[in-house]
Image (tube, rainbow, N blue to C red; front, side):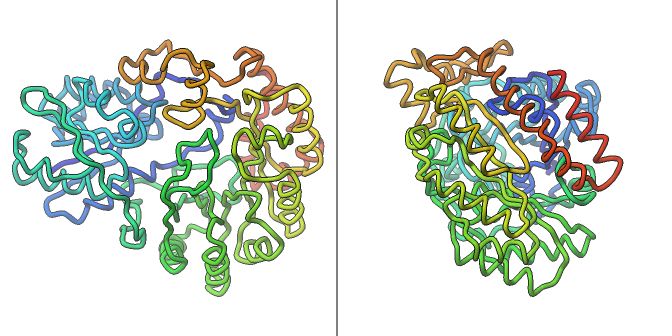
Length: 474
């Protein structure tokens, strides 16, 4: 059975909540979701797998149509976010034209949030709701045995959605989450050229992303992971993956977890195992500020951690409380003091345009940034994302008058514009403020000098210089 996984080209661009130029330029990352799915099925007999990144590989729609027509894959899978739905749909039209017999399966956050709406598209045969490794493997096994869409065995595949031969949409009960992440095979990086991926702030020529946990127990109202079941890989299992890459010459990693430090004991054990292994690696993580203190910072630094991304969000306690961050301003200051003390670079994620935010709140955020002195800054605009607590809250109080994400899910339109949460500022005003905050920060001589010192060569210098020009002229 021949299966392609396709990452679509950036044909349609829906402006994100992040700083636009950084969103377009910062990093080219592999899809860990697709690599995990591929790893779950690659051991099946008579399976031929291929991952096609149309952006990275420079594959045009015409070239893809020719490839599909010649290769005739049995199935094509996509990892679909609401923000790339339009691009996935464009590719699906090409697939349908080139080889109508190819089955098309959508997985990822968008079909998980909008299963019936996604299955209603003519070009979609299957959807995978929630975590996809086991569900997709069972679907492939079904297709290999008897690809008859009327077969009752489809009903036994939890987490699967499909259409009957008469067009009826069926969405099976959800699949329980994978509790023991150590049981999952390592991502199928052998299907991609890892050397092609890059990151503007990496400190070596090659960096690999790894994921060590899923879910998050925190309550942040803007996040789609809010209060979801948290599970994690053991330190020994993570070290196994790092050793695999070190043997291939890779010495830098980005641990892609939303919050790597939730389990303090696991974090310290991992740091000590990695330090004792003496592999000479560097890595960066994301963390909440309330988990960081001197003991943790020291362990992270000794084991090779060189940067931490913190969700600061605001310098106003009132705004933090509205966002249900569960943190205090003093905890933000303490985390940055501790990280700086042990020589760990800090990135601050801040957010403007929160519904309750005032001019004074914004000034408090600016003053906090000056005090904590981050090495990098990401300023985003508060955006009610699909089916989040924030979105539902604003729907309930009338700030959002109609369910525009649902409308988009039913009928994706290239003219769609992201709506922000602010009750007092227009999108243009918010973008102007966002751009101003980013420019002011990165024109600071302290930040410029730090970037120059951290630049490892001409190629990275050129990339940073190009980014700086875009920022200044945006």
